[in-house]
Image (cartoon, rainbow, N blue to C red; front, top):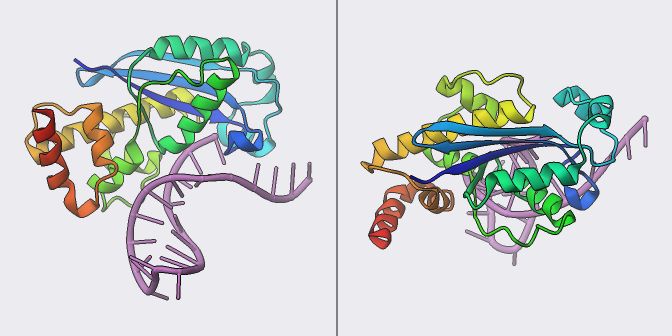
Length: 207
DNA sequence: TGCCAGGCCCTCTTTAGGGCCTT
C-alpha cells in the first residue's frame, strides 16, 4: 500500500527567492486511509521572524533561537519522508521551500518524487466550497480539529485529513477501489469539466 | 519599518486583468 507524505511549512515570508526561510516543518505520513506517523520541528535558519508572521503563526524569535539548526531539521525531515510522494495544500508554495531548504544542504537536486496539491484537487472536486483555504475546507467538510492553525503540525494534519477525504470522494464518485498519488497528480491538472475522462484515461493507461 | 512571488484559473478572455492561495 502506497505511503504519502503530507507536509506543511511555516516560513518568514512567501518566497525563498526573496530571502524567506522556513521556521517550522511538519510531515504526516498517510497510509491505508489514516495518518500512520508524524514528524515536526521548529528550525533556526538564523533569520528574524517578521512581527506579522509572529502574529500569524505564534512562532516567535525566542522560539526560533532555541530551535535546532535548519540544516539538521531538514536532513531529518528528508530522511523521514524518504522516497514517499508528497502532498501539500497549495503545493507550489511548500515545494519551493522544500527544494530551497534542501538545496542549501546539498540535497535539493535529489528529489525524485512528485508534489501533489490538495488545493488544486479540491477546487475540482469541491467547486461549491465557500473558498479553498485549508481551514475553510476543513470546516466545510467537518474534518477533525487539528489544533492551532498556521502551525505546521496542525496544518499538515488538516491537509492529511483533506487528502484522505478527497481520495474517498474520488473513489466514491468514479467507482475506484483505490486512489494513487499519481491519480491525484493527473486530476489536479485536468479541466474541471473533464474529470471523468481524466480518470478513465488514467485507469486505462495504468491497467 | 515596509516591502516582496508566482502558478492557477475565471472571465466583462485569448493582443489581459485580477482574484485566489500559501507565510
